Image (cartoon, rainbow, N blue to C red; front, side, top):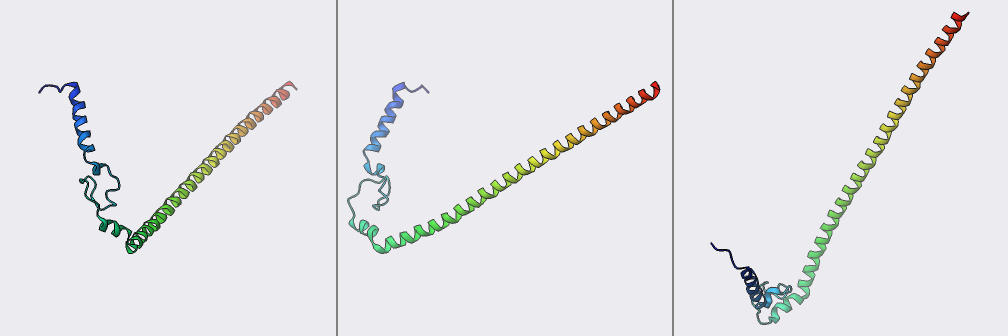
Length: 136
């Protein structure tokens, strides 16, 4: 199969754009609100569909639906907020335990160093006292 000519890709793109632009309803984001499916050919205006969308009972039903969605979203949001708080508490607890661990480790190291220094000091004192005793 031969490779297509470089301009053929642009020609195909231009054809697809012309087809899309020849059907304005395909580009109409409000087609669903007017009762016509998106991408359908431009149909004559249907006043009955418009009146159905303006009907107060239909508006009330939509408001109730949206209120239910709003309530569900509030519940979901509170769940997310609680998860965030729990994770923050875990992070803070971990940081506190880490600091306590570091502090305990430093205390043990300082205690060990002090004990080693005390042992060295005691040996020095013993050596000094031995030296004094042998000099006598």
